[in-house]
Length: 130
Image (cartoon, rainbow, N blue to C red; front, side):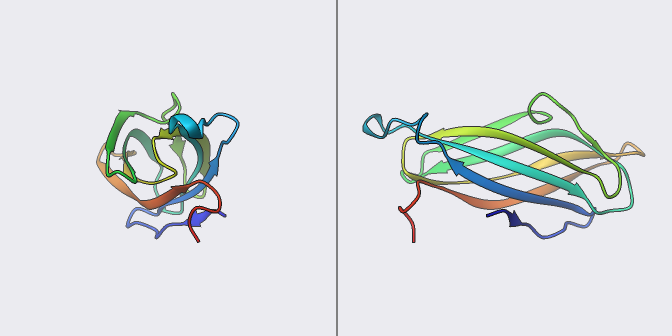
């Protein structure tokens, strides 16, 4: 089920949807693969370009992976007001449950930059959490 985040002061909304991928996972080797689909919507009044991302991925052992990079899935989408961009990516955990949170860095038309926070969401093998 998609999760709607709060709208930030710039009108950016981030929705997340997580899927466990059992066919790519190997539970006996503690390899749990998840895909996540992100929908970024610009409900603000100004065009914004996503320039970079920062993810903090934490497993149940409290092992933290930090991922930083330009854009998302090789793109730096430009979102005009009322436009959305959706992409799917993935991550691998050593535990059945973990969390992700992070931020996107955007640039406005005038060159100013701002950060849109991505609230924590849960990665979980089905039927592990109630």
